[in-house]
Every structure is written in structure tokens, then in C-alpha cells.
Image (cartoon, rainbow, N blue to C red; front, side, top):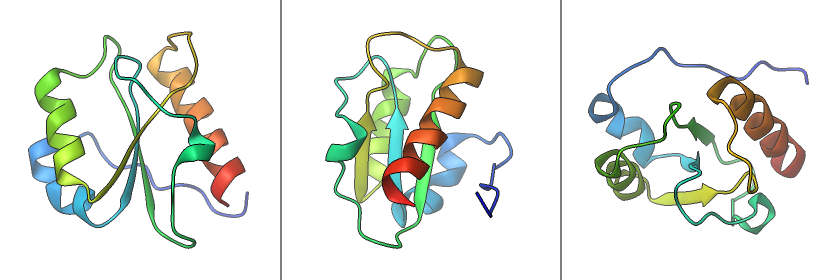
Length: 101
């Protein structure tokens, strides 16, 4: 890959609603029914924001906030296995690059 993905500093979700609203959001949450990444309808050249949950998963309030704040939201499944947060990041970014770049 020729460009390194931007990784934002840890920040409270409520301070990031402006970022969520204008990007395609791919949330990888093992506790929700997710679709296969290839099923996500993403416009060509759109900015994609990949969100990986903390170990233990998102709280319900966080899930609702993210899905409501984004105009183009998809919950994506990484399969039946639950991955550690650091492993999930690698898997999610690899799949995103494979399907959309």
C-alpha cells in the first residue's frame, strides 16, 4: 500500500459526531448481526471510517450513537470468531483495502 491509513487519537465518541456524519462508516462489532464486507454499498472514492470496538465490545448506547450519527453506516462481520482488538484492526483494514481500494 502506498499510503498509511490515518489513525486518530483515542477520543470520546460524542466529540466525534462531525467525523461520523460525512464519511462511510464500517463498524466491526461482533455483538450485532453484521453483513459481509462485499455487501456494503460504498460509493467510489468515498472516505471510509473503520471503527473497531474495544475488547468486551461496544455498549448499546455507543452502537446507537454511531449508527445514528452516520448517514452511510454498515455493521460488518469478521466471521464467527471474536478477535482481540489489535488483531481485529489488522483484519478489518486488510479486508477494507481488498474490497475498496
